[in-house]
Image (cartoon, rainbow, N blue to C red; front, side, top):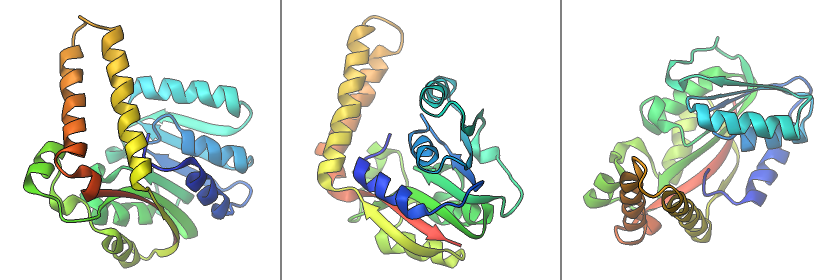
Amino acid sequence: MNPLAEEDVDEMIEALELEPEAHVLDLGCGKAEILLRIVERYSDVRATGLDNSPAILAEARRQTQARVPEAKVFLLEEDVREYAPAPGSFDLVISTGGISFRGGVGGTLAVLSGYVASGGKLLFGEGYWREEPSAEYLVALGAAREELKDYEGTIEAAVETGLDLKRAVTSSVEDWDAYEDAWARNGEHYANAHDGEEGMDELREWIANGRSRYRELGGRETLGFGLFLFEK
C-alpha cells in the first residue's frame, strides 16, 4: 500500500537488527505487510499494529494467521490520532504515510520520537516534495504545501526531535508508475464488478482524479516517497 520496491523494504528490515522480545508498533498498519515481514524475520518480537479500517484489519488478521500463527502479533482497531502510549514504550515504531494524524511531517516526527525508547528506532515512510508543487496539484491532492517537506527537510525535522538517520531509500519514478497504475486498475476492476451499486460512480471519479493528478498535473515529477530509518 505504498510505492516502495519490495527489495528496498526487505533490505531496510534486515538493517533493523532487532533484539529478541523487542516491542514493535506499527501506526496505520494497513494490511500489516511491513509488520508481518518484520515478524517473519525477527520471530521473537512483540508486534502491535493499529488501523481504523475494519475491512483492512480483517485482511491483516487473515495474513497473520496464515503466515505467523504462533507469533506475538496484536492488531487493534483504533484511531492513531487518539493513541497515547507511555513515552519511550517501543523499541521500533513504524509509520508509513501517516502525516495526517499529527500536523504534517514535523509534528508527526515529534510525536513518534516520543514513543521510541532511547536507543530504539523509527521506520518512517512518507512523501516529500521533489519539486515545488503547483497550486492546482495541491488542490487535486487535497493537501497543503506545508504538510510535507523536501528530502533534506524531512531528515532535518527528524534530527530536531532527537533522531539520527541510519539509512534511507526512495521510490523511483518507475516504482511510482507501477503503484499508481496498480491501484487505479484494481479500483476499476472493482467498480466494473460492482457496476450499478451505490458509490461506484464516486469511485470511478476518484480514480480519474488520481490519474489526472499524477499524469497531467505534475504529480509524477512533484511527489517523492522515502523510507527512513532513524535511531533515537
